[in-house]
Structures are given as structure tokens and as C-alpha cells.
Image 1: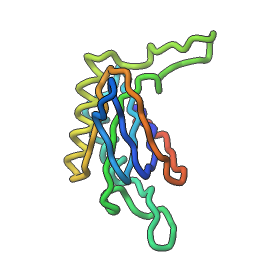
Image 2 (image 1 turned 30 degrees about the vertical axis):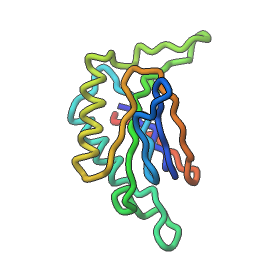
Image 3 (image 1 turned 120 degrees about the vertical axis):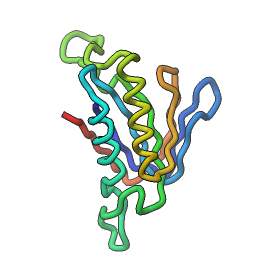
Length: 146
């Protein structure tokens, strides 16, 4: 699995003019699933995201996790994170899992984040989504499970 994690002041995802998920202060997680990913990797990544210390403490140091600041997590599926553009001009997406593998692991990841007591919203898997965010910092990380 691959995640792009952004610390946000707020973020939302809209499908066909309807807001389907949003958070205030917290994290936006753009999530991609590879064909060989497992439920254990979804659980590991959820635990990693929830406990990453990306928020400033009283001294301005990144020492607090999303749980510590009462933040939420918005999870948006994004298979294009596995796009390979090394050859030609059109990216190849063969590194991304198909919906039969990706949907259950995407849902498991979101459920695992919720299990830590973190308010969690999601986009709509496979939909044409518009994602809006205010990146706070900016703080952006890429985390892979391999």
C-alpha cells in the first residue's frame, strides 16, 4: 500500500456536486493498493497514520499525533499513486490493484483508523472526485508498506 499523508486545516471530497466526506483539522490520506497487499498491511498502515507525530506541541515541535489534537482523517482512494511514467507519455497503472482487491483493503484501512477512535471520513471508491484541502505547514509524507 502507498499513502500520501497531508496535514490539513480542513479537507473535503465532493462527488457530482455532493460533499461525501470532510474533516476539519487532521490528515488527508490519499491511498493506493497494490495487487499483493494484505489485510495485515492495511492494519499496519492505519496504526502508522494514527500515531505519526505530525502536529506541533506547545514548543512548535512535531510531537503530537492526530489523536492527540482531536483531529480527523479523510481517506481518498487514489490508484494513480502506482502510476509508472518511466516510459512513454502515458502512465501505466498495472502496479495498482483492481477493485476486487483494492476495495476491501481500502475499507479495512478506514475501519482500522476508526478503531483507534479517530473520526474518519472517506471518498467514494472509483468515483470521479474533487478533493479540496488546506495543507497545514505544508506537511506531506509518503508512506509505503513494503
